Image (cartoon, rainbow, N blue to C red; front, side, top):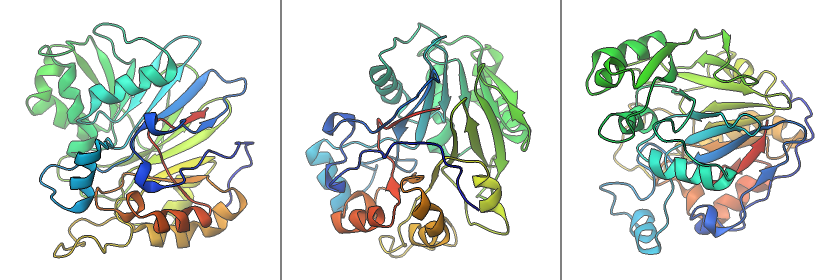
Length: 321
C-alpha cells in the first residue's frame, strides 16, 4: 500500500505547536496548484468544540483564551479559480469565521445568499453539520444549496427541526450520495464517499476521497477503528490524507471511558502508516484534534510527530488539486 508520487513540494512546518494560533501567526503552508485551477484550503483542525472548548478549565483552554488562540472544528473548502465555484466539507459551528478565512485565503468574495455552491457532510455529530443553521432565513437565507449526504443523513435533515425548515424553504437541498459511487459537487472535482465505522446515533458516517486534475486527498475526520482492509480502501490512490487525530494516546482524558468515544490514537495510526510516510513525508496529515491533545500544545510531541514524517494540519494550509 504505497502513495502515488505526485510532486508535492514539502509543506512548510510549524516550529512550535504552541504558536498554532491561526493563519495570522505564520504564512499558510502551500502546495502549488500547477496547471489545475482547484485549490483546497484547511479551515479548521480541532474536534467538534474547537479550541478553546466550552466548559474546559484545563490549562490548554485557559491559556488559549488568555492568548486569543482559536482553532475551529475540522473543515476543508475547495475553490475553482476559473469559475469561482466552491465546495465546503463540513458545516461546523464556526462556519462564519471559517468561510471568512476561506475568502481571505483565496482572495474571493462571498455572494449574498450563496456562500458556497455545495456542502459535503460526513455525519451527524455537532461539529460537522450544525453550521447549516446559518443558511436559514434568520441568517444567510440561502437558496437551494446542495448538501451531499448519505440517505440516512438526508432523512435526518428532512425530519428533524430546525433542519427540516431549511429543507421546506428550499434553503438547502439534501442530495443523496451512495457510498462507493463517484459524484461531482462541481465540475472538475470528483468525490467518492467511503463508509467508516463510527458512533452513528443519528446518521451513518463516511469519509470523502476528493480528486482534482492533479491530486487526490482523503478527508476522514472521524473513525472508530481501522479494521480489516479499511485503510487500504481509504488510501487507495490518495496523495494527501487528512486523518482522524482526536486523541494522541488517551492520556489527557482521565476518568473517561474511551470505549464510549473510540478513535484510533495518533500513536497507533503512525505505527500503521510509518512505511507510507517514509517515502512521502507530509502525505499523512492529522486533523480533528481534541482540545486536550498534546500534539496541539507540547513542542516535544509535535517535533516527534514531524520527525517521523507526519504532520498536524494547520488552519490556512492550502493544496492544489
